[in-house]
Figure 1 (spheres, rainbow over the protein chains, first blue to last red):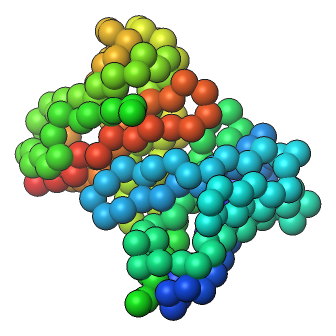
Figure 2 (figure 1 turned 180 degrees about the vertical axis):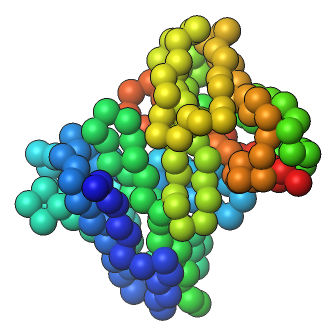
Figure 3 (figure 1 turned 135 degrees about the vertical axis):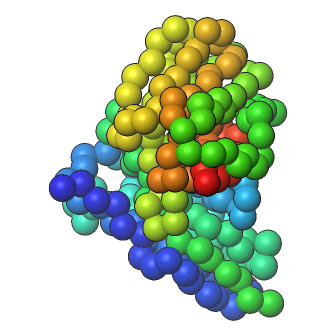
Amino acid sequence: SQKIEQNSEALNIQEGKTATLTCNYTNYSPAYLQWYRQDPGRGPVFLLLIRENEKEKRKERLKVTFDTTLKQSLFHITASQPADSATYLCALSEGQLTFGSGTQLTVLP
Amino acid sequence: DVKVTQSSRYLVKRTGEKVFLECVQDMDHENMFWYRQDPGLGLRLIYFSYDVKMKEKGDIPEGYSVSREKKERFSLILESASTNQTSMYLCASSIQYEQYFGPGTRLTVT
């Protein structure tokens, strides 16, 4: 069956460190993968899209990698700040978007 | 900025009631979506629409219907609410890849 797994439900890191979140998938061949941020009580907000033929994408302090052989995407936040604390969702597209259940990131001051 | 609004942030309904959730977007997007979000299950697609009067079933359409009479408005209908439909409901719109979400409606069915 198809499955999207995000590495853990919760991740705590110290301010200034790099946060790395993982998205693994099985039985998908996505044309692209997206990452969203969701704050409590709010809808998700789009962050980055990476296509199947791209290895890496950057936007300011964010970096996403996409390895279609490993069936994995890594999402990095460098120089993390308490304001980066949120739940981060990965989403795969094979036609429609399918979302993972998210990783709750807490950046400790 | 794209704005997606949903009619209510919180809603409490009784079992068996007919429930309408409204979603409006202001960016002339073709595509609109309804999801529900439950702890540990992520967002699950209920229905989507690519055009006015057009609708497609998502992964979990049972117990729901939708209506899209105007391009900017996409309504989700629970014909006869049940307690297992207690959830956060999120509407989204898109023109291509990225989706823009509304703030969500937390529906409780008692």
